[in-house]
Structures are given as structure tokens and as C-alpha cells.
Figure 1 (tube, helix red, strand yellow):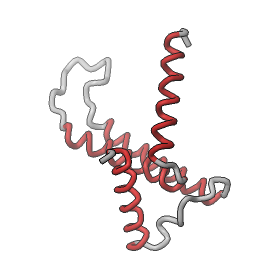
Figure 2 (cartoon, one colour):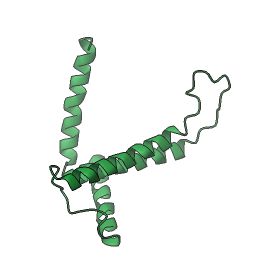
Figure 3 (cartoon, helix red, strand yellow):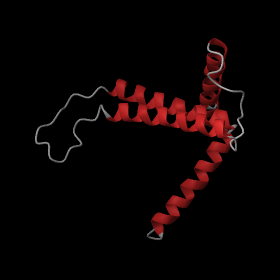
Figure 4 (spheres, helix red, strand yellow):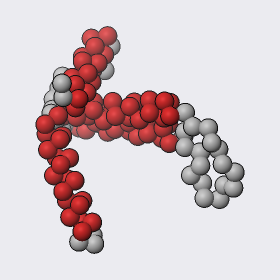
Length: 123
């Protein structure tokens, strides 16, 4: 089983269940990205993902350079759960726009090549 494909399948399945349980929460997809309502939906969904990332960052307590005391407690499970929440919103954006796991992977690989070349050329 391809894990990325499964993540897409799980997210789409949840979105379908939400659509059935709460009509109007999601439009039919893929959305027309040129439409104002679609752009508003995508922006709102992305911002929810960003909020979840901020919740994850809230678990990091030792980042302040001026802090002299160390906080050694760290709940990795809660941190990871917030990261997954963020990923779910970002996966929703991909589903809503009709992006496939293959398309995401290929674009990821292409961008990875670009950033490695930038590093080698002193970008």
C-alpha cells in the first residue's frame, strides 16, 4: 500500500463523511480556483492549517534565546497530533483543488531538485 495514496484516500473519505453529516461544509470538488468563493474556501482552510501549526509550536518551550531556564517536559504525541491536524487541512486543500498524490509527489521531487541546486550555487 502506498502511504501517500492512503493519506489522500483517508482525507477524502473524511471530507465526504463531513459533507454528508454537515451539508454545505464542502462544495463538490474539484473546485474552480478562479471563482471567488473557491478562493475564499481555500484561504480559510489554509488558515485553519496554519492555526494548527501554531498550536503545535506552542508545545516548543525552549526556543527563546533570552530564557535561562530549561523546560524539559515535551509531549511528543500532542505535538505530532497538532502537526497531523495541520496536514489534514492542507490535504483538504489538495483534495478540493483536485491535486493527486502523484502530482504532489512529482512536484515535491521537482522542487527538491531546485532547492538542492540553489544550495549548490549559493542562492
